[in-house]
Image (cartoon, rainbow, N blue to C red; front, side):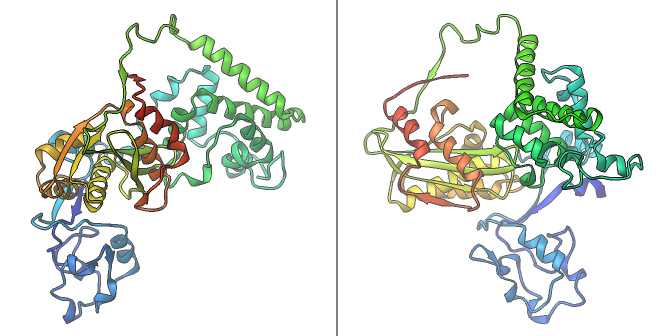
Length: 439
C-alpha cells in the first residue's frame, strides 16, 4: 500500500488545507520536520502562504528546512475557489486514476528510468553493427579511455586525439575538436549539455526521432575515426569522415526503403486550411508543444480577425511536462487574453480533442488537471459568446509555431502585438486559404 501512495501527488484546489498539520508536500505533515511550530503559524493554510502567484515564506514565523523550501517552491498551484484540495493520480496521461494503471505502475514504478523496451534500437534502419554500437553507447559501455581506466585496463584517461581532456563518452563523441568539426559539417543542431534532466536512454531515443539515421551514423563514423588514431595512428580528415557518413546514409536508405514507397501520396489527398471566423468574431488558435530533446514544454496561440489579420499572440513555458497540460494552458491563457482585450465573440480552435472534451464535459476534483479545466469553465461562464472547436493540426500551424517558441522560452507568458518573422509565411498562407495535405 505504501508503494501505491507514491503514485499520487497532492493538488492544491482552494488552498484550505492546513500548512502544518495535513500531509501535502513530501507526503508528510510539516509539523513533524521542524522542532516546533510557532503559535502564530498554527492556523496557517496553504493559501495564506501562496500569495499573488508566489510562495511568501516571510509570512511564517517558523523556519523550514532547505529541502522542504525547495520542494515547496518547485510547485506552482493554481488556487480555484470551490475546488477542494485533493490527492490525484499522476501516472496517467489522461489525468484519471484507473486500477489497471495502478497495477502496471506497481509492476514497474519507474518506467522512465527502467527502460525495459529496447526494441526501438533493433528497429533502426541501420546495419546490425551500428545498432549494437548504439546499444553499447546508451549503456555507457563503449571502451573510451575513461571507461577502460575505471576497469583498470588502461593507466590513463587522457583523450588520444586532443590530449586536452579526459576521454569520457561525451568528450569522445561530441566535444573533442575532431568530433565537433564533424558535427558542424552535418548541420545537426543540439546541445548535449542542456538535456534538462533527460536520462541517456531518452535523450538518444529523442535525437533519433528528430534527426533520423544521420545522427547515429555520424556517431558511428566519429567512433571509427577515433579508433583509426588509437590503433593505426592515422588521423582521418573531416571531409573524408563526411563522405563516409553520407555514403552510409545513402546505402541505408536504399537497403531499408520499403518497396514502392515512392507512391505514398494518396490519389485524392485531403487538404486542410485555417478556418476564418464570421465577421465580428475573432479567431483564437491555440496549441501546446513538447520538445523531446530538451524535455521542455510550452504553449502558444494567436488572435486574428475574419480576414486573417494578426491582432495579438502569446507563448510561454510550462512547468509540467504533459501534452494535455500545455494544451489546456494554451486555451486558458488565450481566453484570458481575449477577455482582457475586450473581445466578446470568440471562436477558439485547438487540435487537442482530448482537452476540448474535458472542457466541454467537465472533470471531477480528483482529475490531475481539474484546476485548469475548472478555471477555463469559469471563464466560459462569463457574459460573452465563446465556441471551442476542434481543428486538425494542419489548420493550426501558426499556433503550433508559437507553442514551440514557448517550449524554448524561459518565461511563463510572453504577449506579442506583432507577429514574429517566422510566422509571416504561415499567416499569409492562412489568410489566402491555402490548404495543406493531411498526413
